[in-house]
Image (cartoon, rainbow, N blue to C red):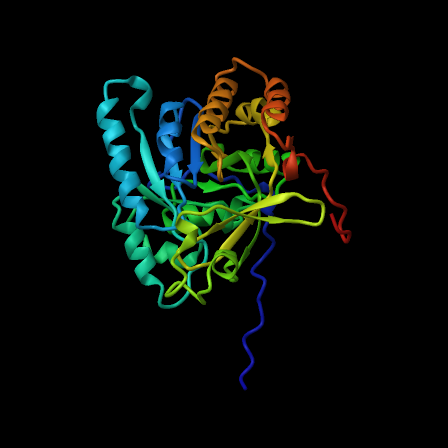
Length: 329
């Protein structure tokens, strides 16, 4: 068996001195004012997000067939409120399933058929399939350094990428200082996705079927949660491939860091929802919109979120101290 060629060093390269700029064709959107992006996982949350003032909405539904309905409703809302300055440049984006397997091209074709304004890219197969479409990188691309971000924007045509969920505030600050802040979206409110699995809880516990062919797709109409050893109920969401994502039951917020992130040039902030009712979607987005406009402080919003969320909130990874090399965090 032939041995591969050994790596050859071509000289000393000082990566620390590297300066990054926007791509030559500049597909990066330049947003002067802070942009609040609502990530919804239920059709009922769509109108609530629109009414709360979100001009950019990302949809991640269990059944991609519902994307057509969501896009059609969004177009109706756009036409109704077209005269409002706050609704100019509004857009709706949809997310294909996080995992792609050979033979699942039909799912991606179904996603594209909704004719959304753009698509969330979540793996390398999505980069190829949506090569000719507007696209942005989701958190699963795990962008944690400026070289990765530059590659996705320069070589793959992404407009922006989501900063990795593994970064704490110090590491996120370093990322925004090393590359143009307009490259990144930062998630400031979410129920952290804890793990993604092949096993379908909906099929296993709510039906006598074995897979999508005979389960009746209870995931389209039912909500499911897993109860852990301390009694916490962790919400579960399915996707078109019958894979499940388990979310933390407590929302984590980066509200206290928003002012600092704005000072570093960040302008695109994501607020994510799982099973929240419409009234909570409106209320949460309203509070974060006021935060971005400087009407309330991050500390005020932190305290309010602890009161209005039954389970409270956490600072999550963003507030975590850096781990020492060689030690587990």
